[in-house]
Amino acid sequence: MNRHYKDYMMVVNMLLPRKKYVKSLFIVLIILCCYTISHAKGIMPTTELDLDLKKDEVVYATISASKDSQSMSATKNFTLRWTLYRNQGLVVLMRYDNYPYQFILYKDYRLNSFTLNLLDPQGVNRSPKQPQLRITFMGIDDPFNDEKTIAHLKITGFGDMDFTRQ
Image (cartoon, rainbow, N blue to C red; front, top):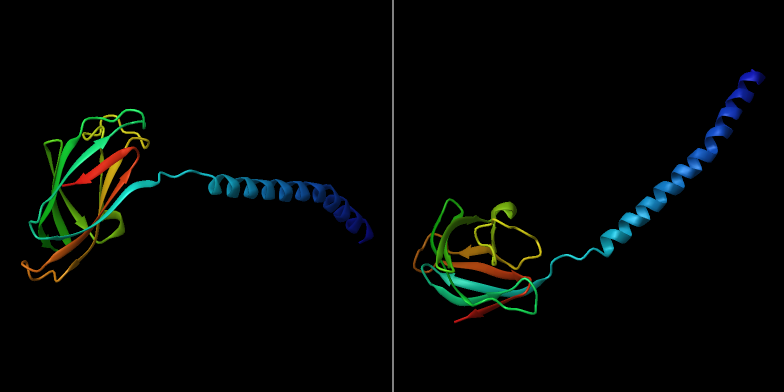
């Protein structure tokens, strides 16, 4: 029994320095991950606007956007309205740069917003650094009476852009 104990202790002593090394490496990796996450720069919103719209009430605005802050693009027309709320879905009609969009927004987190790339509306050359406009469905009041129904939307702009409501 004494011989087995010595063999066991010899194996433990050989593995013990490796365990300390693995623990140290693990702690360093955790610290590095926390540092990276805390210093990561997310895209901060530059424009936020809360809208309370009645059915078929139209919001008119002009938007100018650029890839960098030194040059602004030409202003483009923007209109937004909603027409129908059925099955917990809000049908939204939008026009940007004379191009029509129609989409349905739900209260579910994954389906409650629509994002538009302002420099490339067709989405050919997507980049997270380009200015974007996000329309988020926040809720609705009195969904069964069409005359008094008010939808709550939030418009958020990201990047170098200027949103001017008319």
